[in-house]
Length: 331
Image (cartoon, rainbow, N blue to C red; front, side):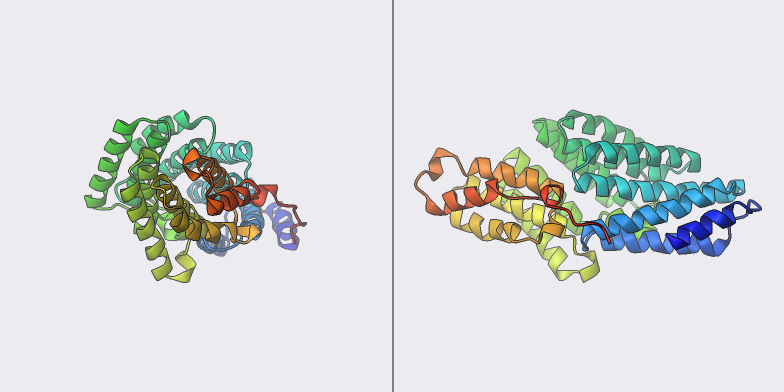
């Protein structure tokens, strides 16, 4: 708060030139936040994001020179993009889409196709987990028009594949997986966001997670479990700062779904217990949706009389995510 007040004061006397150290500091802070996002509790990260976005708003209000403004709009759009992800993970789709609209405006002002592609892709991701899942496919088509080759295009194809599978369009899901595989073979081009790392990358382990999720929705449970297990293994073998607790938890739920579909209750129980024991501050909203789906699967008549299935179903029904936990004031 003190830093924000100081920046607000000095902006009143701005000459229109943004000190380069301000921009460098903010760039480093966004990179740190994007990296911490995947492995740290979300609420403190959200608070840091708000402070960083506030600094950027102050600098933009200081009427920077045109060249500087382009870069500031790019950084502001990136901060709002991260806030969109955070808002979705905290369970507020409306707030997430408001951040998306701001991020898109900033991407336009920065004239940055890499940011445009990421914003449209994130809009698709938000829609995929909402009742408007069909809109996700519209967003991915728009995103592909902007996405450079490399991780950005792979990400869009992965989101499109899973969204198509979620609405029951098997042909489109499979063709999108083909697009993903082809994109892996293309010579990569920088999208401008890879410099930040963390959430703003789409590495091999995340690709495996999305492919596994797509096959789960397609009912190809053998492939689903194989790719989900690959994703978990890659995350566990990788650097601690790259470990995405959200991806790993959702990948475990894909394994649970696959094993339940095959009647392997004990094997499913091993993975589901790891989700149920996850600390409250790491339970993103998407986990609640997926765990409730598991609870419904456990009520299938084929599990009648199975004590393990009944106990798991009871635990799943009472599962609470971050947005349903009692909140303490943010410090």
